[in-house]
Image (cartoon, rainbow, N blue to C red; front, side, top):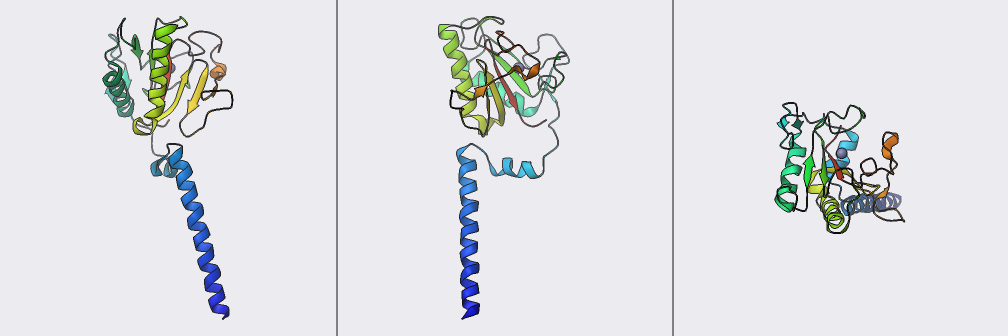
Length: 198
Ligand SMILES: [Zn+2]
């Protein structure tokens, strides 16, 4: 009898554990996280090399991108068309030295900036809507494109996180490097996206 009771308790515990694992799995999947994401918390992979040439570099031989960043760049161009004055995306800039911010993902080739209007200006109307379309598309494709975070309109969204009560993502404080009130510093004039791991 006792053995049977113990077996029943054991089976019950296993069932509870299975339910908990299922719940964790479901929550992770809901937030756009994959089994690989969960495993990478336990065992982080080495960073991707900056091995591809950056198609947005104008004349700079030093520009490089990780394969993941190049894939995202190409997917964005496939979705929104070649950048240009009358296109949804006016310009794209990926690799840069970013000497003023050594922790930036740009010199590692893991980030791109999408400008819906002129750099340094607060976009309005259609330009503003185009910026939002890019930001929302990056978020919707985050899992597929290995997006880590998106910064836009003074807000930052991390893959796997929910929106704050006051709106999209959460307020972006500028990381102590940028003036969050500034068009560029606050990422009002461009959508920043970082991919992969550092
Ligand atoms: Zn950026």
